[in-house]
Image (cartoon, rainbow, N blue to C red):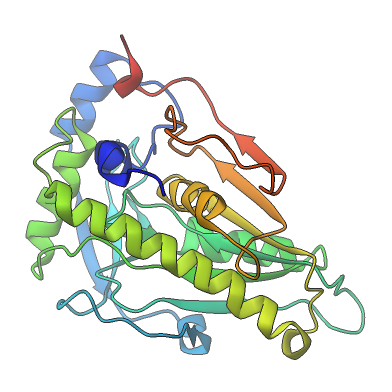
Length: 269
């Protein structure tokens, strides 16, 4: 199994820097403050299906936020931001079974640096896009690093993660525990869909996993840990943490599609 603790800095950052910012941009990002409004869970969240077994590792209650920061380059800002996930679930988005459905399905793992999930921009929007092309989509709500109950303290946390000092934002143990929990949630999600393929009108041999940023990090861990019924048929990695892994990719690993941009600032020599 991947030595997750070695990558906790990458997990926290979530490899969210799609572009390599100039020094001035990085300074401006740190100077600009995040603001947030607490919001009700979106209507689609009521359709979520809990994954079994349900684990309650986070004592804090789930919190939905709309976060704003005009100069945010890290991806922490946006609508329908979810934090303090303690029990994994899948939110289904299904194409019309008679006119569009192809039988293919994709589990989407949103990013958010391991402390939040960008449910709308890296989850629901893509799910709707896939539906229009006949592909069923299931947005994965996976477990995260516990964060302070107070919104103001949470904003302080992501401000630290958006800067140059990654370590110290949360403990290495909390990051490693959350990474392991998220990996298990991804494995459970694949196994859940495959075991209930008939219920969702899916093909058992066409179940993919697509992760963004820290969700891509989780997807890589799923790829390395999968064995049998919990192995996805395809993995998509969108700007994830492509570190030097300790393990070789196993021969049984599924095909992978990788989308990335220039190296983030934290990989500079």
